[in-house]
Each structure stands twice: as structure tokens, then as C-alpha cells.
Length: 261
Image 1 (tube, rainbow, N blue to C red):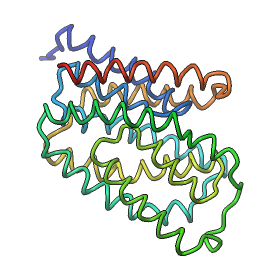
Image 2: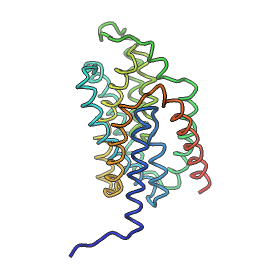
Image 3: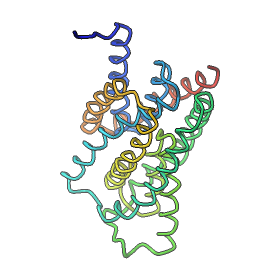
Image 4: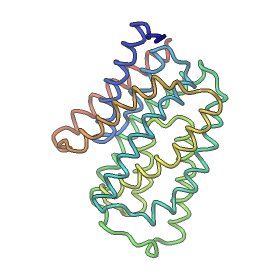
């Protein structure tokens, strides 16, 4: 006998797909889509750590499609991406284990502080603008050992952050890539590959701890995947400023609600 979901649960899944659609578009056009999806998952009834793990399903699927897209465009700096993926993944494993041990109340407060902090840092430093003036091609041999040390260290700590909470990690990765001299297109290609690989490991840890809601995660993933495709073909110059303002306001509202809840 087929067991149908209650209508309130169906509406939650529909809402998550819609939020995922917006977040997927935002991730491509401006960045920071998880700042929308994480609070919505929490407000939909999931404990903070479970929302954190569930959010990774959409991130994983969206970035699989993004990596394929960048590869087809032949703008993927594979050598550099492979060089930074090891420290990032090692950090993400540590961060994910930390995230699975934290309480719901503590996670909500930490997320609220991170949401506000990362938003203002990204607005002030604007790593995407700095990437616009980067070189179109960077040879690994042209990067000094001193710079390599900084890059590897940066990606390790970015991995810890990404494994712990994910939201806003794209801004941090783009900031680290500024050190390397890549342009915006290649910088984004590196970003989606790094996030894809360390998300596989982080999600595995959340699954092993039973901190993933599959129905909500897959509903979110449908939206983020479709939204990401729309974002890829949208006009970044026309939509970027509006989307950034929209995301900033939404993040602040969500952060305040998390702090007082």
C-alpha cells in the first residue's frame, strides 16, 4: 500500500525546491546560495547539524553539473585544481567531523555570526573583481614556493571551514585564487571542482552520523541544479548587483532570526 506524505510535508519539499532554484542561480551569479538554503532547512524543522549535512546534497549535485560545464568550455586549469584539492579535502574532513559533534543551539548561533561576517568580508574585498584582472593562463612553475606555501595553507583552512559549514566557502576560495593570478572564469572552475571533491568526503561523514534528510536534500538539489543552469546563461553584469543586494538583505534577516530563536 502506498503511503502518501502529509500535505504540510509536500509543501515543505516544494518550498525547498523553489529556494534551491533561487540559491542555485545565486551561487552562479553572485555566490552565497547556502546562506539562503541553510536557514530555510532549519526553519523547516531540521536540527542545525542535520540541516548542515542535508544542504550538501544540493551542493554536490549542482557542482557535478558545473564541473562538466567548465570542462566542456575547455577553461579548466586541472593541474592547479588537483594541486590544491588535497589540502582542501584534508581540512574538510576535519571540519565535517567537528560539525557533526556540535549542538543544534550552538550551530544556529555560529551560523548567524558566520553569515553576517562572511557577507561583509565578501562585500568589502570583492574577490571576483580582483579576478577580473587576473592572467588567462598560469603555469604552475611560475608560482614561487613562498606563494605555494601560502596557497596550500589557505586551502587547508578553507577546507576546514567548508567541511564545517559550507556557506560562503566560494568567496574564500576565490579570495585564495587571487594569490595565483587566474581570471574569473578559471577561478570559478577551480572553485566548483574543489567544492565538489571535498563535499563528497564531508557528505559521507554526515551520512555516517545519520545527519542527512534525504527527501529534503533531494528536493533542494532539484532546485539548485536547475537554478544553476539558469544562472550560467544569465547576464552577470545586469543581474549581479541586484542579486548581491537581495542576498545581503536576506542573509541579515535570516541571521537575526537565528540569533533570537
